[in-house]
Image 1: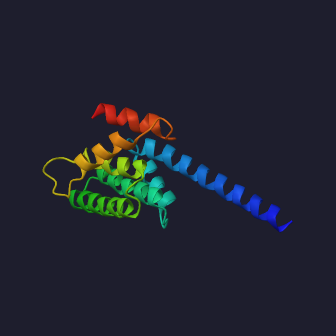
Image 2: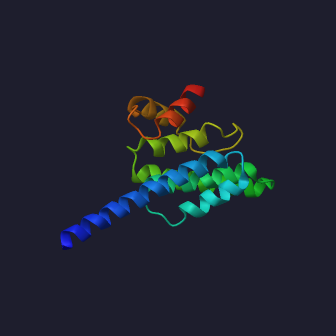
Image 3: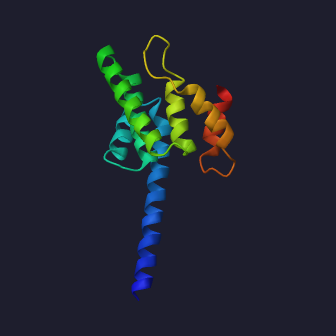
Length: 147
């Protein structure tokens, strides 16, 4: 009986986590064009310890920087987002999606902004490790082909 309860709990928890990642990804895809989605992405990913969710949290700040109007606020949000993404990569440097998220932000930062650039190493890692089996393959692959 206890074993069945434990299995039910594990199945419920794994389905909930999967659904959260799907919602986060959907919100991420809308966030580049919509500041309300960027705010929602920030809220969805706040206070999470998982490296992938943490990387999405960092991206939310980059999108908020993109949508902002105050130059100081934009720079502050971008730096905060980059710091969070770098922490996520340190936490799980072998996660292709985490590296992709950092790459997608860093490859779109204007040249006049000073930051520690990881685009070359992230691009190489993604190209060497992304497989068609990855559940976010289509999005990552399409982005990589555009760069």
